[in-house]
Image: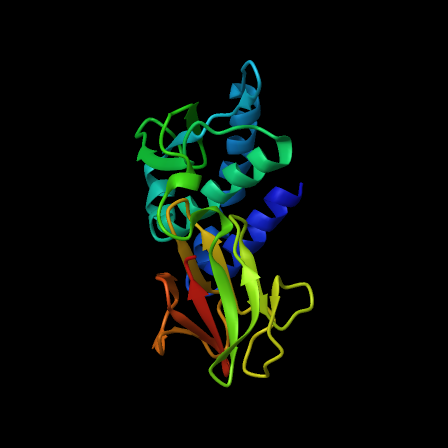
Length: 230
């Protein structure tokens, strides 16, 4: 399934370095994503004009697994939220509120075991949330300080790098094949470095993962891209 494959690729890039050894055994993140998709399908409700899928998920984990996931919890939550959005878009399901994912500890669970409670929780839709929502945001390549090609940012994760299949291709020898990604976490756009050789800068400051504000400049190699929320 493309959604799960993309989830594994994105999260794999994030944990490839320091956290790689953490996920060689025990509960794997993709198991959570698979369960989330199943809960969305099983828990969907048919309305008069639309099918509504659960948007709020509480995962109960064994203490040992929770401790392992705690190190990348923010990234994992963001990626699981993205799975919710992509599944809803793929199947044409509606969401009554923005995706929410929480982790709790259940001391009665053995390592590798978990449970998931999926519910529909109404809230302000993502179209109404902060600056840059709804695909209005853009990332523009600056050429000699002047705006060049502009890329609209939707709610799907966009990869930046030298590979031709990247969403934003940067022909820059200082850029890695898959250098960084831009994603919408339900409230704001976030740039995350994908373990690149030369790193990713935001306003000339090294940024492993950082929310973007209107006017921020992302530097990849010698290429500068300007983020605009509207």
